[in-house]
Image (tube, rainbow, N blue to C red; front, side, top):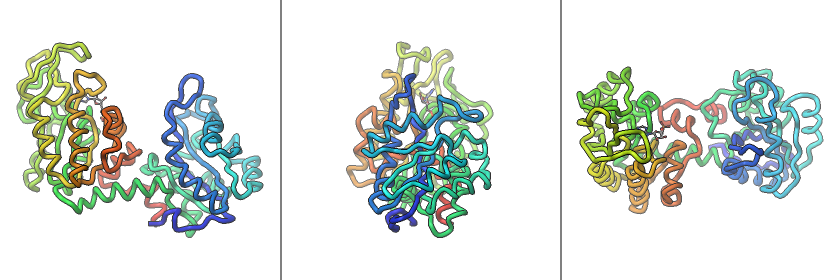
Length: 396
Ligand code: AMP
């Protein structure tokens, strides 16, 4: 793999695409700087080699042109604090002044460019815009796994201008290595746990997993469309009427391929979608009208735990229930605990997707699994079997 580790950046002006799409409070204070911290090893390596760094990122979804709310200038101070060196800022990501700032950048210095998405050309993957960015540097590094599934100007198209001088940053390399270790599933049994709200968001990943997994555990709101499709009574549980056929199709394909699909036999059912609802443990396919399944039940927890403890490769995406409410967190907690315990027994475990990663942190198991991915959509597309433009652009 072409990573920054293989190069010395002495004398290079390195354009580094990072994912600094961080959350802010009303006073523009960053509420979670983990994405910035994740990019530091790559930046430090280039600086230590004697190179200079030009940082490119997007922030939010600005409509058109500059907007204060999405300006990367709010990152200048936190970045200075983290790197302990002064950072230069270009008020525009392209243009005369930016060309001047990059031309005068000395080795050991860092220049942060303004939000790339102030230009619609970024998301359009415009090659002229990519060429203008490319002209600012002598080497291209992609360390933004979160946007690797987009063929944007700065994530993919720009790589064409650096046929020999392009590499993955440390974070990106780590993400790709861990995700591919799961995809190879060299150590079986491979169990995938898929949860979350909707079947429609997870159909492609489940279909692709049918070709590599031994077991697929399905929990969360999406399980009830499967129960409905098989003729079950699901009361007022979440379900997608237009996905019944696809659920039947998945169950059939799994049978034909010898993949075991496990649905939660029982659920914690509630008489309203609220933290103080009345709750019961009941069969997932016999939920009375007016009640809804908001978590997997006790028997399902035990079953899923035993499957996980027997697994040697584990992928987990999506919570088992409405884990944000304590009354419905148990299933997600048990799964997080089981993934951690399986890891201790020698399994390779990867957690991906904002909600399951958040759950692993919330329940204190984040340090006890093999890897937690930072990429939401990018990771999903990877496991859907798609080629990610950001990865392909470096590998080609
Ligand atoms: P996703 O973004 O698709 O991974 O979905 C995560 C969301 O699904 C979380 O906010 C959960 O509260 C929600 N969720 C999980 N299980 C259920 C359920 N049984 N009914 C309704 N929402 C659920």
